[in-house]
Image 1: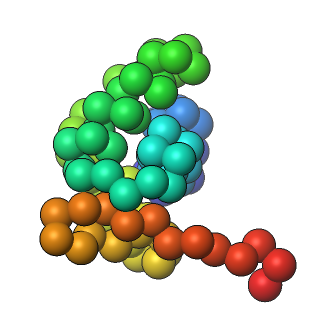
Image 2: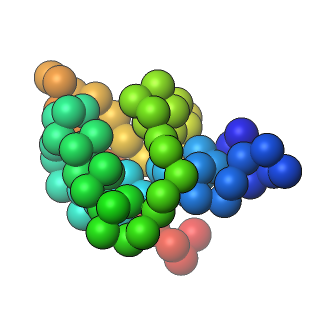
Image 3: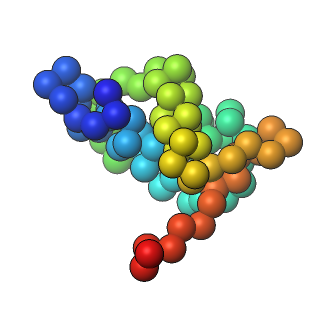
Length: 86
């Protein structure tokens, strides 16, 4: 579920969907609804045909939160900058 398995396609794994959310929003502060719409647009533009439901999107946001990559402040998703050198 978090990583690709026999039953979960690589483009639907929660890590992949989380990465797609980050790329779709360009790490700009957005509402949850805006992030959802941008993800759907990004997936269509990049030919990801496997369906992603809203609850799967919410699980991917939960994973990003658990990893310390996103926070919700006053109904706005704030993406945290991460230093790759560490």
